[in-house]
Image (cartoon, rainbow, N blue to C red; front, side):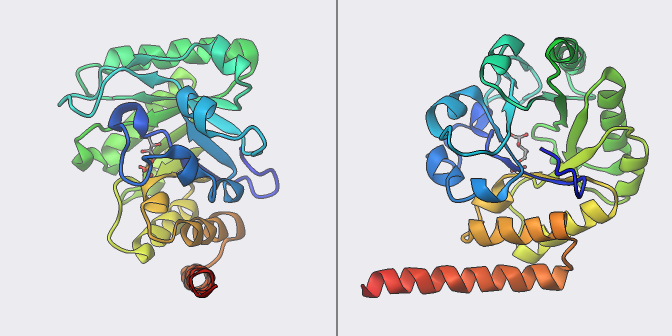
Length: 263
Ligand code: R5P
């Protein structure tokens, strides 16, 4: 999942359906994942999507989402349990399991105990656990003070990797967290430059990469987007180079589409 030569990773998050249902542009997971999977270092999905929509020939390591139990219709999204056993994760031959923790929420304790249980079980089989510092619908929680607390708790309980959000003073979050961090993208940002800037700042300030979904596959040019993000994360491309790559890829796609139409 983490490239040994760079210590970095581009993870493609496609696990939103477990509480959001057929969310925009992830209505048919296979169609969304297929063109993108070759440009990621790991793919995050649930077992239902893994079984139905991931071709065994694709070689991306799998991060299996194993928490859930609450849908987007509920005001409080923090009431999650573990939805997939470690035994099934082993059977599915995944590279890691992932669950959300909800620090400060009604179900803080249950989610933290879910994490500790998962780490105990994962250790038996050598399966790493990624904790996700979820904020539910309270997106305004995403500041350095809160995220430092949530990431540190996750690491102390034994998470091998933490997925969090980028924020102002992100270095503080990184400094206080003794295990590697990746950043989510969150809801779709206004422009491509905003997304690329987020990825660049995150890795410059200490994240080992991204675990991004909507800002890739909700973009009109998802392949161009993931390639540009990959250039930033894995090749330290500058923002200018990444934007240029995005525009070149976009132009190639347009040309292919126009050629297909004229034929
Ligand atoms: C939510 O379902 C998951 O934790 C996502 O994997 C995470 O939020 C990353 O996806 P996005 O970049 O769309 O926020």
